[in-house]
Length: 194
Image 1: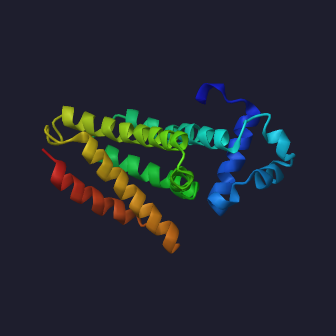
Image 2: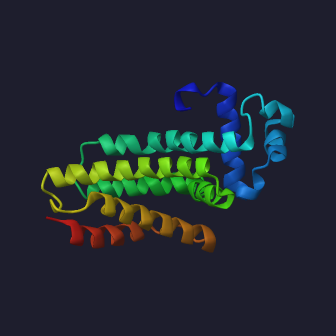
């Protein structure tokens, strides 16, 4: 899907993400989407066969957008924990800019209890885990963190911290406090350093 998106499909996906970010999953209806794009509902189905196909495309589309933020950090020449800190700030910036749309997509996959949507969400999570694991693996290979550290579990800890922090901020309406990242990194670093 990533390489085959046409211009109009990209516009539809952008509009869908905007609806999700502003109004949550209930706002993403074909009627609202058509209205936002100033087209008829049947016109949407020329680009996506169903709402489910649109949702599946959204998972890949979100990864494309996230990847643009994260890949430069993952590939940057930085030492750990500065690299992880930069990654976390980039991740939080993305989620704040997009009002936690990833959490909405997660709820969509759970709410619909659809195996294909769950698989698409798992694919998104695996890509995020992979980015975090790459940062941790580089640090392990340089001897900065423990050689026996389970990178998969450590990546889940990092992503769990991100999800919990963003969920709380979205529900409470409070802004994200950058010091939270510093505190997490201190605790994580104390447990992981070689």
